[in-house]
Length: 417
Image (cartoon, rainbow, N blue to C red; front, side, top):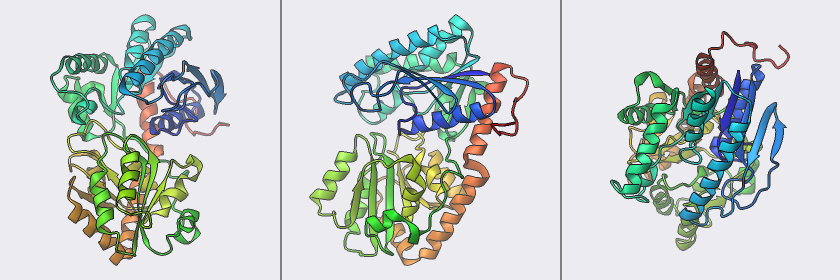
């Protein structure tokens, strides 16, 4: 097959969609397929063009277009950057040789319109990889007013993208329900969750973990939130839990990553004098992901209530790979809550339930063995169902079905086969 991926971020960007796109592309190349990607020359959230306009990485032909003129300085600035990327990506996509299948992500929103144009002009089959839904997300987070002219317009655009695609790949049961409610035929909806690689991310023993040593954690119970502190994530519940537990010397917190709400986290820690019990750190290199995730005894995953189905946080699957339990903060309908409860690899609490969250954290500090056993079940869930090997196989099957491919030219997965 000839496969094209279109997303504003791609390797070497550290954004989650960039990493998953790179994983999928590498896997397709390993199985003998020709893969190209169209992405931005800018790193996510930064101004300027710092990446080469064209290069080949891991056998993937990457075409980078445009640049960010404004970064994330304002909503209007982001819209302007998005518009420039739409035009540049569409121009490049139309000038490339025909691909059998194009996979369109959701960064920027509605980039699937480029896939729709390729479908009409070149007959390329189109897959809409629904990482999140717009305008559902800004409406749920209070950024856009429901029922407004803008909301209705963007909702019609998104429904058009969903219905025009040959397949809409959703990340969980809650997201499938939401997409189904928009009138998308059942046979177009394919559920393929995101993943972590069980070989790339493995548990690292506490005593050998340099993060614990550098952060002076000792033998204390470390609770970590790692990744994007975005507008769809609840930070208030776990911040208030950290404040409630600040006098319990057995417990420490680490807040690692970036995003729109990271400044709120840093401000809260400073204003409440939590610097001695809370570690603040930026995004860490992907090559140290296993050590970072293994540094914690348990992890936090959060989602604002009302956002379930609109987003499915990908951070859970790295946590499972590292063999650590997760505490989900949000609605139990979320795919994340369901995976945790079904596999007994953590717990789920509602947004704002600080008492239950602090009780669970104290429980792990009181009984480290229960924490360890939940971590073992987490790793087992990843290996048996939620790992990259399962998800990537599902992707290959879908793409081959759409492309009319008769079979995998390299079923062993070996680059030398």
